[in-house]
Image 1 (cartoon, rainbow, N blue to C red):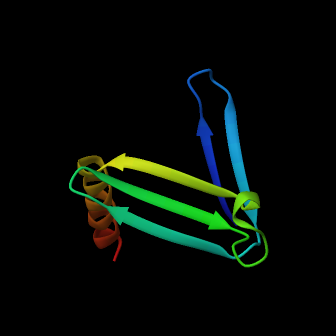
Image 2 (cartoon, rainbow, N blue to C red):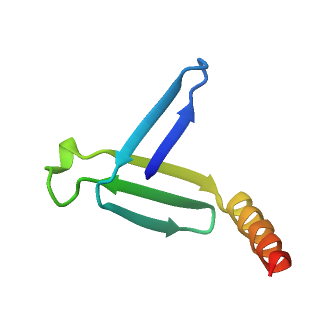
Length: 77
């Protein structure tokens, strides 16, 4: 089940539950950032009613994290 959870500066937790809805994922990258866009209900709801999450990450942090994951996965094989 796809979902997103964030915690704001005020300490409150926010959740986006996609449940079993079809999910569309788009990844866009520039030299400085990586943006991950996740959207549910794209087949059945108008754009303004769709559940979504957008995450913008500095590219160097995204690269470091994916590199660590790749090394960890390689060790497990």
